[in-house]
Image (cartoon, rainbow, N blue to C red):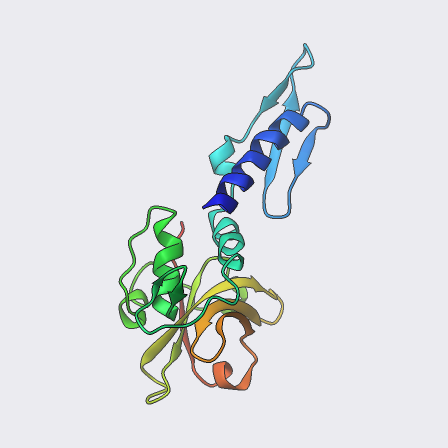
Length: 182
């Protein structure tokens, strides 16, 4: 939560800095500023609309790298995969169920992995049955030419980590993706 507050402070500072230049750019979003006749900046995009919620969610998720895994874990002390997504999305006003199979039925289907955005949820088959949802991840970034994506998730062996969709275990088990943010 502290990280989110710091990011919002950066946005406020960016709008002040906008008086110095026509466009202020940040790693995940743009704030477009137009000069008035009296040289005062006029922000064309409202601050909250300029923020990419998915990118903010991923930034927040990165703060939890290395957090241990615990079955049914839903707090920063320990997460399971669905609990990690539930915890993060809660900070953005979304209520997700606590298990992967139910999460995989929410939002809008993203059928082509080249269209994945940061914050989208990706689902994989479980260990026992590769065709039944058993694992949730959150997209970090995507190569739009190949559809290869990186995702952050709570793994049983290493806790919260970032993995690639091309890793053998995940490439064989990928099932679907869902967009929660509009």
